[in-house]
Image 1 (spheres, rainbow over the protein chains, first blue to last red):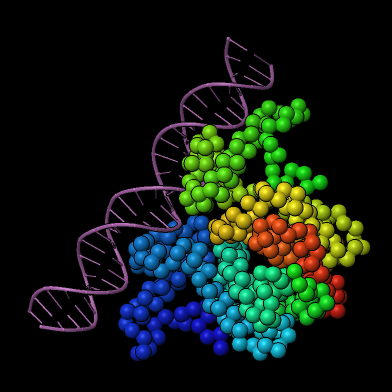
Image 2: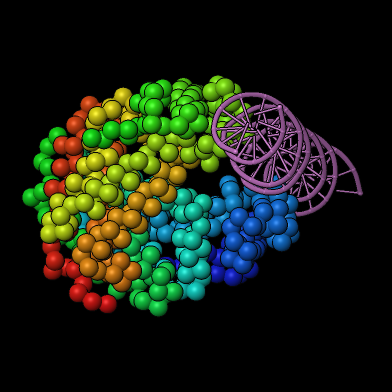
Length: 219
Length: 219
DNA sequence: CCTTTCGTGTCACTCGGTGTCAAGCAGTCA
DNA sequence: TGACTGCTTGACACCGAGTGACACGAAAGG
C-alpha cells in the first residue's frame, strides 16, 4: 500500500502493458520533476526560472507547460495522489463506523505515505511549508480535499452538506489534524513517528467528532 | 466596535490630526480599492488587468504596485484587519477563561464585522470563494492567523507551541469553524445570521477544546 | 529663494504563461 | 516504398504581472 505516492519509483521500469508513448510521457514528467526538485531545494523557489528547469530536464519551456500548469504545480502535483487516497479510503470504510474512526483511517493514508518515504516526503513538505507561494497552492489543494471529504461524509451520514455544519466541520477538523501533524513532523526533521502524532491529534479532536449532542438537528 | 473593518468608511473624512500626505495616500488607496472591487466583481478576476484598475483609479500601473503587492492583494488586504482583531481579542480575554470561550470570542470579532456590513462583506467573500487565485491568497492569510492564534493560545496555557499539538489543533479548529460559517453565510447570500451560525459551529467543536483527557501531557 | 524630500509617471526589462505553426516521428494502409 | 494520419515537440510571438532606474513636480523647511 501507499505504493506510487511521492511518485515515479524510478521512472524507467519497463512494463510491457503500457504503451511506448505513455512511457515516454512518464519519463519526461519524471525528468522534469527531478530537475525541479533538485534546483528548487538548492536555490530556492524564486531563484529558479522555468527555463532553467526545462533546460536541465532537456526539454523546452513550452513542453514544461504541457506537463505542469505552473511552477508551483511541479511540487504540489506530488501530493495529488494523497488527496485521492484519502477520499477513496473514506469511501470504502464501513458506514456504521464512527466518523472519527473513519476519518482517522482516511487521514492515516497520506500520513503513512510520508512515513514510508521519509527523505523524499520530508524535503518536499519542508520546501512547501517554507515557500509562501507553494503553501498557497497546497492550501488550495487542501480546500479541495476538504470539499470532497465533506461530501463523502455527508453521504455517509445521510446529511445535506450545504445545510448542516457538521460534515464540513468534521472534515475540517480532520485536515487540521493532518496539518498539525505535518508541521510537527517537518519541524522534527522527520524524527517523530507521524502515525503516532496523528493518533495523538485524533485523541484530542475525537470528542467533538463523536458527540451528537452539539450537532444541530435541523436548519 | 468592528469600526473600520471592510475599510475606508468613505475615504474623505477630514481629520485635522492626520497629515495631508497621509490623507492623500489613503485617498489613493481608497480609489484603487473601489475601482478594483467594482471591476473585479463585474468582469471577473482574470478579465481585469492591473492597468485597467490603475487607469480607472486615475493613477499609473507603477503606482498601483506602490500600494498593493499584487492583484490579489487589493482584495485580501481588506481582510487583514479581521485577523488582527481576532488576535488582539484573544490576547485580551481573561486567562482563566476556557479556551473554547476565548476562541469563540476571538472568532466572533471578524464574523460580527461581516454581520455589520453585509452587502460589502458578502460581495468580497463571494468573490474570494469563487476565485481560485484569491482563495489561495486568503488561505495563506488564514495560515498566518492560525500561526498567531497558536502562539497566543500556547502563551495563555503555558504550553510550548512547537512541542504540544493542542494549541495548533485548537486554533485550527476555531478557524475551521470560521471557514464553515463563512461558506454557509456566503451560500445563503447573507440571509443567515453569521453569529448564530458561529455559535452552532462552536457547539459542535467545543467538546474537544474543553476536554483535557485527550491532551498529551508531555512530549 | 533655494534645497530637500516624497510621491508619481515613464521607460525598460525579466519572467510566468499561452496561442500558433511547422517539423519530426510512429503507425497504418495501399 | 510512399502517402496519410495523429501525436509530441520546439521555435516564435505575444500578453500581463511585477521590478528597477530615473526624471519630474509639488510640498515642506531653511
